[in-house]
Amino acid sequence: MSAPSLRRRLVRAVRADRGSYAVETAVLAPVIVALMLLMIAFGRVTDASGAVDSAARAAARAASLERDASSAQSQAQAAANLSLDGDGITCRASSVEIDTSGYSLAVGVDATVTATVSCTAPLSDIGLPGLPGSKTLHASWTSPLDTYRGRT
Image 1 (cartoon, rainbow, N blue to C red):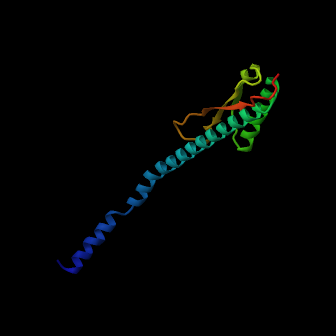
Image 2: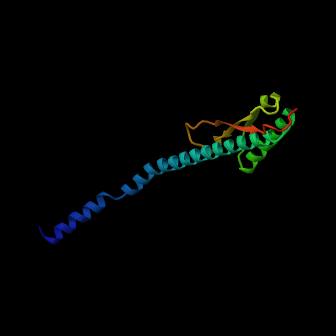
Image 3: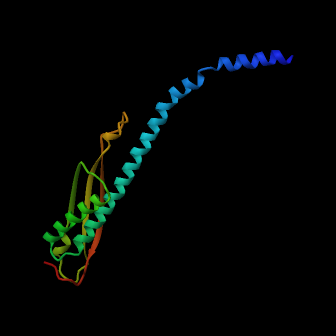
C-alpha cells in the first residue's frame, strides 16, 4: 500500500466522522445536567436531614433545662426554630412536639424529655422532572432531666 492511498483513506475516515462530536454532545449534555441536578437534590436532602436532627437535639436540650412543662415547650420550640434558621434551612412546614411527661414524675426518679421535629423541605425549585416537590424529614432526640432538681 502506497503512502498516498493510506493518506486518502485517513482523510476519508476523518471526513466521515465530521459532526459526530456535536451529536454526542447534544445527546450527552441533558444527561449530564440531569445527573448534576440529581446530585444537588440529594445534597440538599442530606443537609436538611442533618439540620432537622440538630434542631431536635437543641429542642430536647433546651426543654431539659427548664423547671416546668409549659416553659419547656416554649423554649424547645424557640430552640428548634433558631437551630433551623441558623443552618439556613427553609421549611415549607415544620412542627416541634415535646414529650414533657417526665416533668410529672417525682424528684429523685429518672426522667427524660423527648423532642420530635418535622420539616418539609422544598425541592420544586431544582426543576428536575420526576423529582417530588418536597421531602418531609423527621428527627427525635431524648435528653435527661436532672434527677434531683425540682419540677413543677
